[in-house]
Image 1 (cartoon, rainbow, N blue to C red):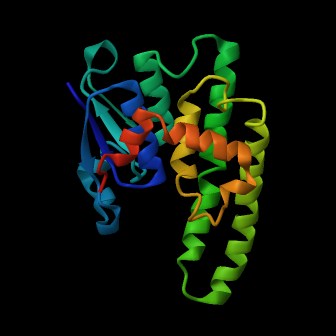
Image 2: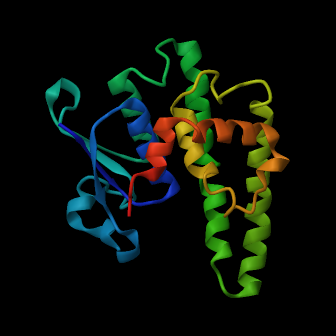
Length: 208
């Protein structure tokens, strides 16, 4: 049975479509049009009580019973556990995967997301402070990533769910007003990721 994937075409949605394709899992897309407030529909809230996409329903969950999962980081961990892919079993090797996944969830997502918000404001006075504050923090985060990737092919050594999480947001680097040429290690990693067939399919699948 296919996993039901409730989503929209956003960085957080793309993280999951990339993971599903890379893991070779069958899934069906259930578009939740956040521009029409469909995320507040009671049926969706029963799956995602925080009224955010993405969410999944796996009819073949643990013990063969259905399970729903919300929050993109939790979904990535669940899918990695389900398939045994892209997250090591060894605890020492597993720690950097979780570190960089949490780095994305706590920083490289919320901060560039604020850049998206303030860019869209029409009032220049309202835009200026927010853009300056969150653009600087976004640039700092790209710098953190660039230093990490100076001696790592992927964020946790081997490719992992942490890379899927981060690429969903790096995909929007132009909207972040970031020139990847200034972060050559991120640029190399990003081009490597986008050249993977599973990642390309994950970005190509219609989510809206």
